[in-house]
Image 1 (cartoon, chains in turn purple, cyan):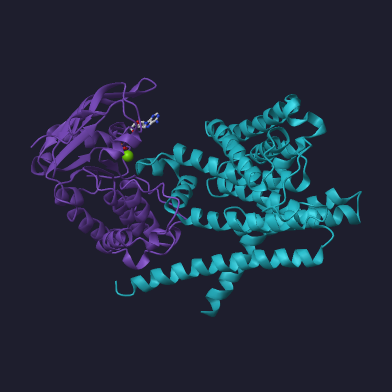
Image 2 (cartoon, chains in turn cyan, yellow; image 1 turned 135 degrees about the vertical axis):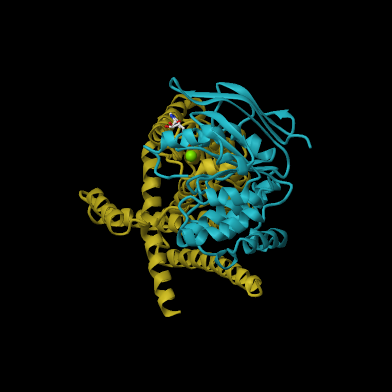
Length: 254
Length: 331
Ligand SMILES: Nc1ncnc2c1ncn2[C@@H]1O[C@H](COP(=O)(O)OP(=O)(O)O)[C@@H](O)[C@H]1O
Ligand SMILES: [Mg+2]
């Protein structure tokens, strides 16, 4: 199958410190990739380079064969590359229904409409309710986001990304900050992602990684030190070394 | 899932109810004003014109989070456009003059928007202040068009629909103003809850998040600035039609700053707040300046400090919050 996302020799340095060092990877529809690595390895930076939130020093990003390196973040979203954020970024004053409706309307090029209310647009409401119901947020759809629990906000963050009907989804630590008791719902949501969607997930929770991913990429000090099956990753000497090296300052262990 | 359509319906009924209450409230206040101050309709008409300016400011500041101390540039441009159309081009139909005001305001909104939106925070505020001074100075220098510091005179609007004269009593101007305000209010109620209005509220909270959804905050904000200019332009035109002169003060920093004060007084991010802030501020100012010509500014200052300290959401925002919490207790 042809690649939906290709990253070629991406490099980025912040004031002399190389944070992304010659990273290449390729993903096809239906991929389930986990990107792991010690804190500060450059995972979030890598996502920002792919989405266009950061500009690489060199290298190329291609979506469906089209070079998008010079296209801004908005243009990449419109081409089907969608991300979620490590720290939830939701509109505190708005309801889950409004979040999802806005995403649906934006996807369909209707977010600039100056008349009408999404509450009276049956197609938008039906799609929004169905999506929220799937993630167990249906009963909260008309509450303000500031009034709902953090685990539910994480789910809404995923729902928003899904409402944009992406081809490639980059999830930055979708379960971060969620109490252990609530991660089940998020794991279910991840398992239910559309089967033709290419997903790259950054995650520290290794149980989640092993259940979700069919391929694991390990990033350390800005380079890929492992790219292979979940079964092999724990046996890899370089991976152990990278994590052992970071035990001193990492707040988590693998 | 079964009860969801009804939940959605109640929400819609509630907003439509609030629209009708709003329209009713404007009409009642307008009638009461007419009965209380039949000899001072000029003041009431001016309140309406300024209310349109404050509504316009609320669109960009309250709904989109843009800091500006130069919003009278939009209002004054509308006033001059309507005045120049009448005084220099013989376009004296009040409806066409209003249209000229809308176009002038929208154009000024486009110019200001494109410039102000290049910056954020304090630099944005400074840009807005520079713009209002530039607009002011431009109008001052272009005196063959604007009358400079003498003001633009020679504006004599035709009778409305060929029947109702804009006379000294000011009844026509007042009724015309009330109708314009109602029309703008209804259109803006549609606007703020449309998909576009929702997009703007999102931009106010987190523009980066909006970009991650594939929408451009910049384009949306410039559109809102143009709309805001059209609304301010209606107010400017109304002022030109009713007073039959346009002065440089309509294009001033003072007017811009006062508009912001009125908005904060009433409460940002709500059309009712903008209206309430204008009415309270202007009536209070009129009353205390007549009652105590020496200390009225002090009293206005004290009123503002009291509101900002004790009702930080503004008069309307605080009152609405109080009533909502009361209702919740009873249910
Ligand atoms: N905007 C930035 N400016 C300077 N340094 C940065 C910036 N963003 C990230 N870094 C640095 O790059 C390294 C990688 O950060 P990050 O990509 O957030 O790592 P991860 O997500 O793997 O924990 C860190 O050392 C961080 O301090
Ligand atoms: Mg990170």
